[in-house]
Length: 179
Image 1: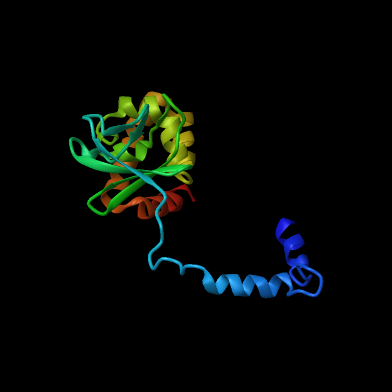
Image 2 (image 1 turned 90 degrees about the horizontal axis):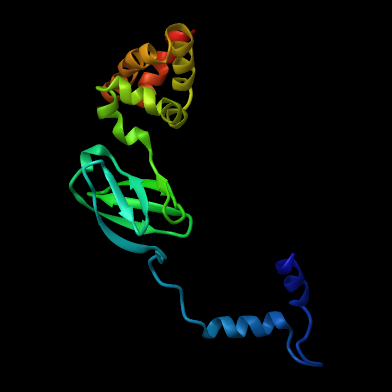
């Protein structure tokens, strides 16, 4: 609405008998500095070490990273709405959390979860929500048929398939099996 009101005023003269605002704007634009050749990245860069639980602490907040990054040094780029963690050209992105919070993506821990059904049982609700369709549907079906503990033991095979074939191929195989 503001831009529309300003555009309406562009054809008016600034002073009686003077140039219009549009003409004055074009004269001023010619004197402005040109835009830089590269984009500006407004992020703040923070160096972090990954702990043995594959998490980093940025100020007072914990963020998960892939479990293969344990013990490495990474860089976290802090934006107003997100945190991007970078290591060797790979990156993971989390929504920015408030103080003393945490953002854990359990997909970062698939190799460990594929070996530990008890851990799957503990984080299954969050994990299947992060994995999405059809993994949440197969989890609910396994729990309904076998109970939570046995479902976790069966679901570890699904996680191993994701690791072996990739998430898209595993999702396709699960969709065909559910049909």
